[in-house]
Image (cartoon, rainbow, N blue to C red; front, side, top):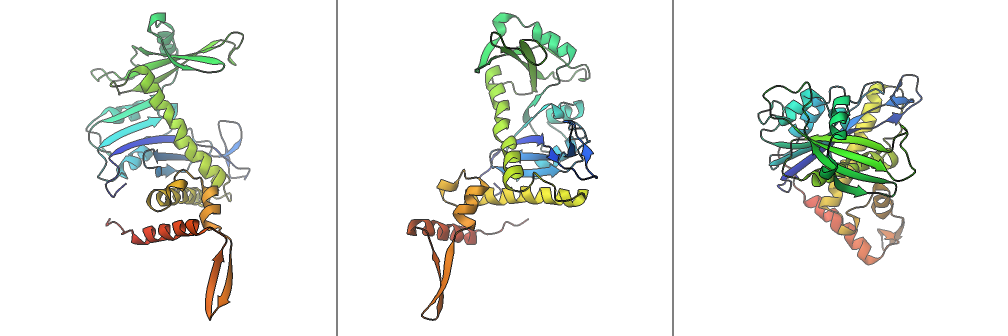
Length: 320
């Protein structure tokens, strides 16, 4: 990205649960024990640009701004468009104000387009329920649910007077006939807050939903294939280092796919890369006074590995 190829940066924020039964681990909101690290993911470049390791009993909504600032500060100068997506853990006044301020401290100057899942307060729910039927638009038709969306006029009680109001898009999720939510109702309301007004409601919601395929994919890969799912011990610092190593491994593999590996491996997960590249079986023998490595691969596959090594060796480190 720093080589001039990354002009747009969409940063996604999310926390994940690491289960641990060590006595030093604390209880988390799902009822178990463990840790709750958070990460910042650059969607366009498939890279992690920030992380913060936390005990399991630290609320997901607590003090997220410093991590988000570090994520934006890590971006290269080539980036000219900035965006941000997060769940309701980031729905808090200080962060919303920072994102909305084009002259913000601790981050890039200019516009940051964002969407954040809003807390469904009683006042917001009342506004969602009051939307006329004619204003609801079909957003998604699912097997058991119908999802409608609409803009709602709402200003949070702690939003400063005189500040430009944010945009709220409501979601009305209705169960199909005979089905109910756990609450016993057939209708549920959700909402997303944003400062992006160039998209219609449906487009905005779908852009917000894309986060499920980015940072949640990151959690899946790092926890299930790169060792981040199980903290190695009961010491907080060691576990934090272990988690960061898994994120660094993810970035290294992502960079290899973008810069060196053949296009066939462009979407490969670590397990496939491991058996296609790192764990290639071979036999070492001697012939005419030389060591010979015989690899059980087709010539074309071997050529791709050689080309990848040549591309990596040709990379010139950037001056920092």
